[in-house]
Length: 285
Image (cartoon, rainbow, N blue to C red):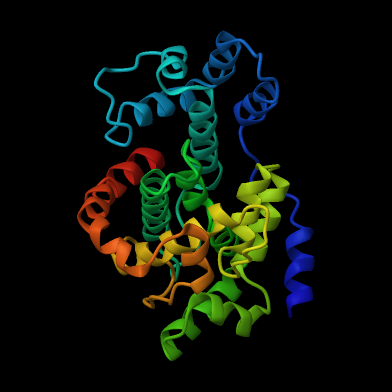
C-alpha cells in the first residue's frame, strides 16, 4: 500500500505551488547585501499578500506600539529575516487554505491546532533562547501540512484513517501506518521539498514524529515535537485525534528542559494561545 500511495503522490501534477512573491523573496534573501527597497518591492508586487502581511504585522501577534503602514517600514522595525518568515507563512496559507474536500476532516480545527503549535513554539523558542526569528512559529504552522495533502488528494484513504482513529481510539499517525503504510510526515516532507522550503523546515515536517537528536536540525524539530503535544494538551483545534502523547525523553534533553519547567510557563502559554483564533481568522479569511 505504501508504494501505491507514494507513486500516486509523486505523480500528482497539480500539487499546490507557492506564490511568485515567495520565490522572489527567497532569491533576494540569498544575497545579504540586497537593498531593503528591493525586498519591499518584491513583496508589494503581490497586493493581496502585501496587505495580509501588514495585517499580520499589525496584529497582537507582534504587539507593536505603532501602526506599520508599509512593507519597507516593517523591514526596518522587524528585520529582513522576520519579513521572510512572514512571507513564508502567508504564502503557505494562500496555497493550502480553503475548505476541506472531506467531511471527516475539519480543516478549520486543523489550522487552529497548527497555529497553536506555532505560537507555543515561538513562545518557547524565545523563552529558552533557541530558534528565534519566528522559525518556531512557521515550523509549527507547517508541521502537519501532509494532512492537507491527504485531504485534497486522498479522500478515501483519509476517511479510512479517521474512521480507525474513532473506532480504536488510536493516534492519527498510528492509523495512517496501519491504513496506508506511510504518514502525513512523509507526504508533507515531499511537498516541502517540492516547494523548496528551507532545509530546517523540511526536516521538521518529516521528523517531528520520529525525533533524531543527531539531526542537523534537532533543536527546531524537538521544539515542534514538544509544542505539538502541548497544543493537544491545551485542546487548541484538532491534531486529528484526542490523544496526548508522551514527550520523547531525548526532546527534553535536546531543549535542556525538565517537564516541571513548563509549570512556570503555563499562564503565559495560555495567554499566547488566546491569539490562535485571531491569527487563524486573519490568515484564512
